[in-house]
Length: 420
Image 1 (cartoon, rainbow, N blue to C red):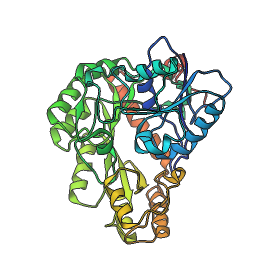
Image 2 (cartoon, rainbow, N blue to C red):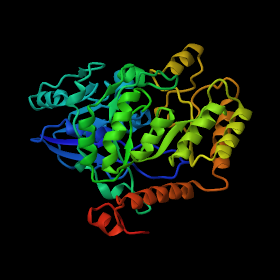
Image 3 (cartoon, rainbow, N blue to C red):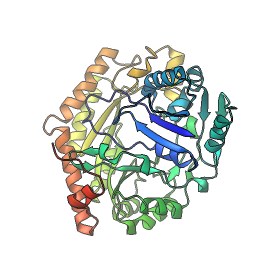
Image 4 (cartoon, rainbow, N blue to C red):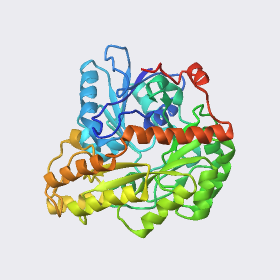
C-alpha cells in the first residue's frame, strides 16, 4: 500500500528561539511498517503537506495536545477524498474518545511486535476496525529495534548551520508519578529498560553525533544506567537528557559517556537544587532549567525569586512553562474536581497560555509572570547567544575526542544548508 505518515504542525512557544528537532514518534512508527509498503513522511512543521499526492491510507502521529486541531483538519480533508485515516501517538491516547469521531480508526498503545503491521493488513483487506486497543499491553521490550530515521528530511533540522540532535530512547515507562505528568497513565508506573546491546546498536547506527536520550528519567535504576553509560562511552556520542540520578559517581560516568547537558527540573530555591546543578556543572555538563509556573504554592513574588535563583546558580538555559491541565494527569483530576479549568481549546494548550485558575494569582497575573520570567532571565544574554554558547561547548568536546564532523563533511551528508 501507499502510506502517508503525517506529523501535524502546531503553534510554537513564541518566547522560544525557533528551531525544529526531528520528531521521535514518527520514526518509531515507521520502523513498525513492513518494507513492502511504500511510505511517505511529512513533518508539517518543516514541510508542506500536499493532499493531492496519491495515498491509500494516512497515519496521523500526534504527540502533543495542541496538535489535535490540525490533526482533525488533516483527517477531514483526506476522508473527504475517500482516504482512510488512522491516528495514534501520545495525544491520541490522551484524547482517544474525542479523536474517534474524526478518524476511521484509533490506535492505542505501542506499535511494535507486529501490531501496526496487522492493522495495515486489515486496512488493505477492507476490514479496518474503529479501534485497536493495546493500552498498557506492552510489546516485549526486546522487540523494539532501531527507529527508521531515513524518512527524515535532514536539511530541515538545521539551526544556524548546526545539525540538531536526533532523538532516541534507551528505556520506556517511568516508575515516578509526578503531579503534572501523564506518563503514569500512558505507560503505567513500570520502568522498561531496553537491552543495552540493542541501545548501543541503535546509537552506533545513527550518523549524527549529537543525540537526545528522551527517556522519561535516567534516575530510575542505578545499576542499569551505570551499565548504559559505560557501554555507550566508546561511541563518543554527545548527548542530552532529562534528569540523571543525582549521585556523584553517576554524574561523573554520564560526563565520561558524552553527556553534554541536562534538562533539570527546578521547582524551588532549595539547597538541594543548588547542589544538583553544581554537581552537573562541576562535571562539565550544562544545565537547562525546566521551570513550571503556576503550581498552587507559587505567587508572583515566588516566581521572581525563582528567576533570581536561576541567574544566581548560573544555569546555561531556562525554559519556562505554564502548568497546563492536560487530560489524565493527577493535577488535572484535582482541578476538574475544583472547577478550575478555564477552557478546552486544545490549540492553546501549548504551555505558553494560562488555561486554569491559579490559587494565589489571577490568570492574568500568572500570564504576566510567565512573560516576566522569560524577559528577565534572558535580559543580559539573549536566548540565541546562550544556545550558541552551548553548541560551542559541544564542538569543543567533539574536537577534544576526535568526533567532530567538519562542515565540509556535514555538507556531503546533507546535514547543512547554506548560511543566510
